[in-house]
Image (tube, rainbow over the protein chains, first blue to last red):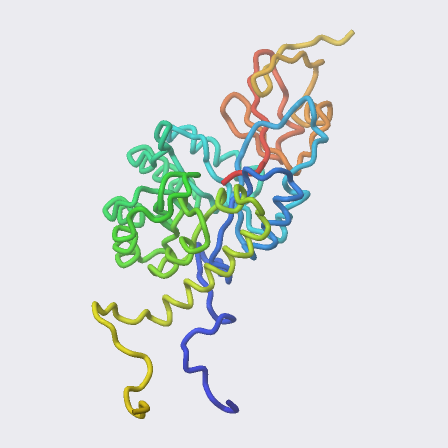
Length: 269
Length: 70
């Protein structure tokens, strides 16, 4: 192999993606919620190889100010914290939450999600547009959770969102990619990174999202609610890498008849 | 005895001895200023302004931090 150039395109070491001017090698973003303990959160996130983690913004517990904090287990110096607006059902609440997040963390890169009512918590797109506009005007770099709607995704991109993040399926549902065709069309039309966010339930679904050509996937419950979260975190890391390689390698065409892999010549008679 | 004022912090009524700034309040509450953000009457209080921001009767404060979330 001496002197040979890499013929297979991007090597794992070179493969990376960029959002808001920051370059990342891991294409897996993980949430930090729903774990049994902060210890388990820290272990699972380390096993996932993620470089970006989503975090929520909530009131401090005044009666127990010394309680262990997420930062003690998931070091903000090691991981890029991506504050979210989970639980926000209006544009105003989302903007208010992220202004507080910016003050708490000191950075502008955020995840916007404005959700409709239970039981689906489907992205509320009119409210999402309104919040995105206010946040962009206020200097935020907005990664935005959105419907699997190519027109909505394009509009968010044109408004100046730094990444669009259509859902695979409702948050926490673990149903996988319910609309791969629309995800694919969003990816093909986008000029900003596209991340599949929400709905992934197991490793093969993360790989499928990467095979569609998305830049990264964002998931939380699939790891946190697995029987062994740390092992599932490893599985997700491998799946995202496998899916990315498969996408770059280019799958073979589908044939509706057999095409033997072994030569037909030299058969014994 | 110093005069106390009633303010609302994270939805709870609290009596605070006057004079008090946001910085004083965070000390009383034993909160690490590096890990929280404060909103007073719907306006963000920048960390650099904690000491200079005096609390007044009827103030409504939100004090938040990062927790696990998806």
